[in-house]
Image (cartoon, rainbow over all chains, first blue to last red; front, side, top):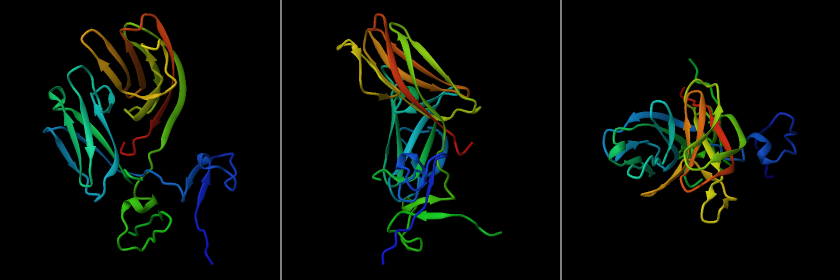
Length: 116
Length: 136
């Protein structure tokens, strides 16, 4: 006999037995996006390569830290400067124009593969 | 000291599989979820020409991860878009600037909009999501 095991946690006020996916705080049948690591660094080369060591291409967010503000990357503050990134199974590669070559960045790397 | 924790794999993957990797877990107590601190919607009238801003406050005391999605003013059509665009975005020309950005500080998110081709004002709707930083 096939048994369907699993676990669900609903939001307050929602019946876990009938709640739709958007009303669940957790479900073992829905993919989550756990954080693998949060990395702070200053670019020291262009492109700058960060090796994540996961063996698959993970989802990742990159933010530029101006000191006062965080700004989402890709970041394009003016007509001349852009910073963006690419992800593969071994690295996250940051590409920056001349005005952003020493940028302070924060990468949020998830345990989830980009294809999921 | 014992190493306690909870691991839940995705359907069809056995916890004891030799080839299991982090992508196979639905939940792993060694890796935190990115929890939402606050989220909401807004509708703000931005004055055209120069930069105009809307400030959303938070009390985290550090610069959190955040995302903002907002409508844009389509200068060619002369109307507000039905679509929402993730900030930051920008277009620059020799004689114009058009951008919508989110500046995330330790106390607020400043949503700034500028369209030098917009002569009056535009009311733009949007949504924001602020996340805790598990490393803080």
